[in-house]
Image (cartoon, rainbow, N blue to C red; front, side, top):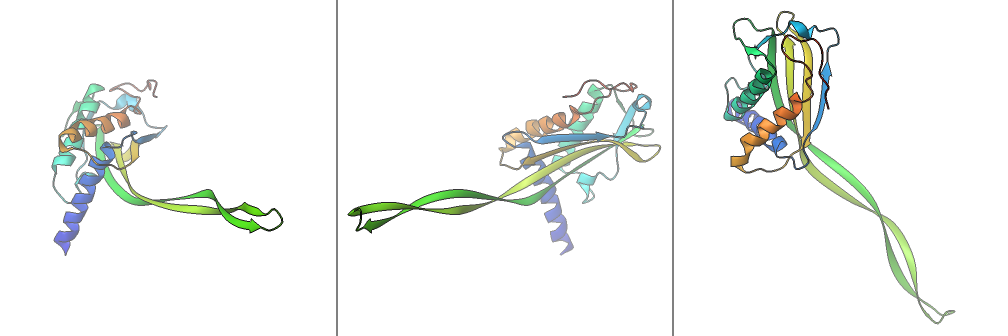
Length: 199
């Protein structure tokens, strides 16, 4: 039973990331920052252990790809990877939830009656609401940056999107894109406490 639970959790994590990356319109991105954090002091980083996305205790192909994408984003901002003495821990997570949309749409129909006074059939409108229920999967991916010395979250970026299907050969590029979209909201560079403009 425990093995089944671990397999299910592993599949849910991998599927959520791959499905989120395949969103046709792109995920909704939000971020939050600790205003008291001194980002000018951060120059190095490493990955938090264990990563939230590797809750089953080992790396997967998907978690490895996300780590690679996050590392590329950090290094492009001047941060140096340092497992021994990082200023920042990078933690990654992904999950999905089943969602339901209920849409009520007014509709009109016509019933026909014969009017003896008018000596013809007349249309009488009847109004009703049509209810449509749509089920879908929503994927969430988040990147947390944690002050390693204080063990305190200083920045988080979250991508939320309706899940879709994707071809295996396109998944890596779309994972890279989803991680890049999250990091577009991270306004700092290594050793600089002055935020750059964010979208």
